[in-house]
Image 1 (cartoon, rainbow, N blue to C red):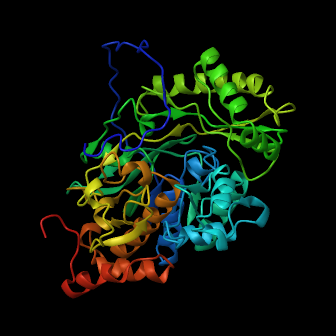
Image 2: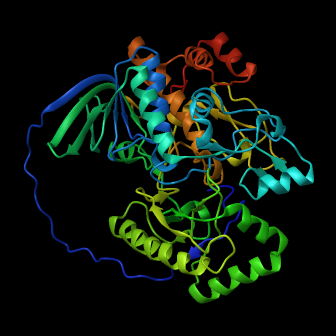
Amino acid sequence: MSGRLFFRSEVFGTGPRRRRPPTGESWREAARDIPVHARCDVLVAGGGPAGVAAAVAAARLGARVILLERHNHLGGLSTGGLVIWIDRMTGWDGGLLIRGFAEEFLARLPAGAVSGPPRAAWGARDAASAAWWGARTAAFHGTVTHSPTCDPEAMKLLAQEMVLEAGAEILFHAWGAEPLLDEAGAVAGLAFESKQGRRAILAGCTVDATGDGDLFARAGAPFDADVDPDDIHGCMNTSWLFGGVDMPRHLRWRAARPAEWSAFLQRHKQRHRFFDKAFVSWRDDVALFMGPRLAGFSALEVDDLTEVELRSHRLMALHLEAYREAPGFENAFLMLSAPQLGVRHARRLHGVAAVRREDWDGGVRPDEVGVSPSLAPAFGEVSVPYGALVPLGLDGLLAPGRHLSCDATSHSFLREIPQCWLTGQAAGAAAALSVAAGVAPRRLPVEDLQAALLRQGAWLRPAAAQPMAKAGASVAAGR
């Protein structure tokens, strides 16, 4: 794919490992009728950032919405995965780009549940501000950005309440197992597994917000699953929290004695190989670890998922022992390992459109449904097209979130939580509008979607809607 390894981060290769050999056996499953659990207009599979935004956006447009989630909470990796550092939502001038659902969600969190630069500091470039916030994961390339760190429990509760407040229904402990296809080959809902066995939900439009593209892949839609072992975006790990720390003291030590900090890291990397630095959280007495990032595993193989969990939990204990040598961690204790495995990449949809490296020029796509900050000040803001959520040749389904249509390098930022909120809101609104209009999502007039997103507070550039409004165009392939 184009643009691979444009940016590098530290990854930890695990070397050769034994894979479970195939048994060569099979078991024939008998055909059966399964109960229809419910019918709805819009079915959202996956309650992560994209799924929550999709459910809220669709319900606010009057659709009957069911949000299906396999865990006991909403928020996905932002909560259950402890990816509580929300990446950049501002451009390099400090202007807020990712708005709509994302802006409302963060604004509604309790004051004590959010830590980050005040709005007046967004875009600041003075050395002191950049150094201060850089140590707190909120300044990059010498610029302060809107990159807050949030309380995962507060995010779980708020996501739940926003979905219910919008009028959508939540179904926890239900794993979307298989898309249901009608006679024309369009997705008509899904079969899910739960304590009640296999059941079905029928829907006018289904939103695949699984993060791994489970539904569109099983429905036969084409996708990419290439993962480079040297790239952070192919890594997995379970994040964790340590309590009882003094992070301000720890950061002062790192800033005042960089040689000691560097020696500490190198000593334990030589001793343990897999070793990572601590990050700030929303509280001064809680430290966040978002690595070590383990490379060479597949997010689509259950044995690999198990191995990453086993290694990550052992590394959590190892890090606690090592970090008690560091200032600020003398009284640290194991607080929480993430209930959800941190997967960065599994599949990427082949959509009607895609975001590619050559699109980082700040240009406006005619079917723009949102604008993403770029990776660095050298690049323009990135236009996210509606077509990146629409599968080639598969109707009845939209695919927002980290499995949207893009190349490997663009995936490096489009997989982040704010971008998942952005694409989720667009997919939810599109699903509701297409069901109401009685058309396939690819035939939905994009100007109708853009108008709905603007009413919901999203930010689109004025040039985005003008060509589509004149042409009355859809994103249908070949049109």
